[in-house]
Every structure is written in C-alpha cells, then in structure tokens.
Image 1 (tube, rainbow, N blue to C red):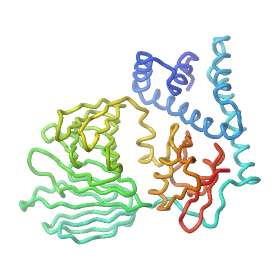
Image 2 (image 1 turned 90 degrees about the horizontal axis):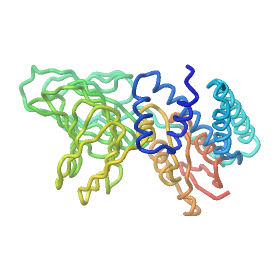
Image 3 (image 1 turned 90 degrees about the vertical axis):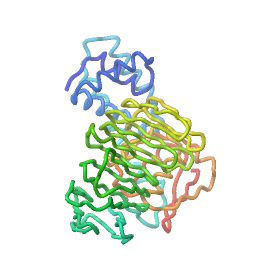
Image 4 (image 1 turned 180 degrees about the vertical axis):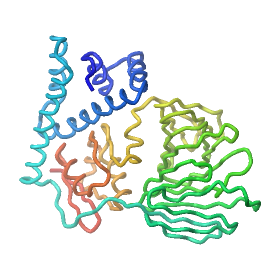
Length: 383
C-alpha cells in the first residue's frame, strides 16, 4: 500500500528516535489506528532492522543512505513511496548478495557441530506431585477431582471451565527447560506462552472472586480472557500484577528485578511497599525486587515480545545479553575469550527457529567478533 512521503519520513524518524515526545505520540496514534497502518509500520521497521544489521558489516554507511533517500524526498515532493521502496529493495538485495558470498568465502563461525533451535516441550506437575513429560503429541490426562486435561499439538495444555466439581481447588505447575517452549489455555480461556527455562503454577479451575496464578521464574506472555467480575492476578515474589483483560509479557529471569511490558489493555503493578502503578499500552514497568521501586518508561515492544512470534529482535543490545537469550533457547554454554566482547552492541531481526550456527554467522558479519561451536559450547573471540 502506498503512503504519503511525509508519513514515510515520520515513520523513519520514529524508528530512529528522532522525534520529540509530542511527535512520537502522534505517530503512535497513527500506527494504532488500524491494522493497515500497523502492517505498514512493521514492514518499514523490518526493513530498517535488516538493513542496519546486514549493511553495517560491509562498511556501508546506513545513516548516510537513509539521509540521502530522505533528502531526495524533501527536494522533490513528487517522488512516490515506491521509488523509495525500490531503493530499499536494491540495498537489501545487495546486502543479501554480500551476506551469502561472504558466508561461502570467509566463514566467521568455526563449526564442529550443528546446534538446532529449541522445541515444543515441557513438564507438567499434577496436584499429587506426579510429573508428566509433555511434547507436541496429543494426549489426555485426568486430575484427582476427575477433571480432564487435554494436551494438543497446537493448543498445548488446555483446561475446560468445569464447575461440576465441588472439591477444593487443585493446582498444576508447568515448567520448561532450556531449549524448550510451551503454551497452555487455562479454564477461563486465558492463553499463556512460556519461553525457555520458565515455570508457572495455576489452579485447574477458578473459583471465588479472583483468578490468581503464580509465576515462579522465566519469561511468560499472557493473553488474559476478559471477566470484569473476576480480576486476574499474577503473583511473583514481592510483586503482583492485577490484570483488567489484556495482553502483556513478564520477564522474571533476573534475580534483582522483574520487567513487564503491556501490549494492550490495562494492568496495575504493585509491590509489598507501594501503591499500584498502572501501565499503558507500549509501556515497560521494571520492579526492583529488593526496594520495591517501580520504574515506568515507553518502549518499542517488539524486542520484548518477538520470541512469542518466533523471532529474535535486538535493538542496540549488548552481546552478553544476546548470548544469554541464545544460551536458554539453544541450551548451550557460552565462554568469552576476551571479556571486552561482552559490551559489543548489535541490532537485528532473526528467525528463532534457525540453527545457532546461522544466528552466529549473521552476528559475526556485523562487528569484530567470531565464534567457535564445540561440544555444546559457544566460544566468543575477537577477530
């Protein structure tokens, strides 16, 4: 779909954080106006990420190329969006050529084994303590109160809203190991996705005035079923999140803080020492576990939720933080020959289901770093 040149430039400036708060708010409103606008924004964002990643490795001045395109637009308002798109495609094609040719001639990853991406798998702990290994195969389980738990290759673990049982509430726990992911649907229809090395405890059915689950560790995405009569609460250490029918993602990997990003709807963050802090869509709330302080800021959501969509998205992110994500997903150990490489920064957008060797090949093209993969260990070196 064609858009006005001015809007295209505004979107580029928005992606590159060149707008003031008022202008950012206007662009936010435009993006969230409808699905078409969101698709246009995502397409431009995807091209932006890919060009930043791939062109950087060949010493092509990305900022100069964008500025040159923008300058042409300003000089001649008759230039249409498709001319700019054609330029982008040309640059992208050239970068792909460089990437594929370099990969063949001068490989930057020393490979003694191919490490495949994570798989759909988890462990379900029933109320009696029985542990059941679950994969993407179909199966039926039965709880002590007679409730049927359905395991489906697509829906994951699902529970029916069965109110015929009058016994006490039973709890199940689902956990994923490193190199695994899984999803489930609670009895109220709430859908949940667990990233690698995550653990969640929840009731097999909800009774009373609230719906409460317990995030024990990890990275979990929630799509909460709306029910104004029953608030949904996620409890973690000294913090809880009160949900008002919404989509959000919690990162509880860090022992010192818990990070929550709100995709849509409304949530309230509260700790043992403070009042509830409301988040708006597009905001991040970071809770200091020790002090209970809550920091709120506006962010680009995609790097925080892309895993749930099958991607890795890094925006000017430290190599050490990137490698921590890869450690969990590929179940590998990372060793640094030079600690200075931990502070290298990268921007990119990659599919999550590629081998780690492909991911590392891509990273190695962007800066002065190379990798060796051996015995489930990734060794990071300076070139």
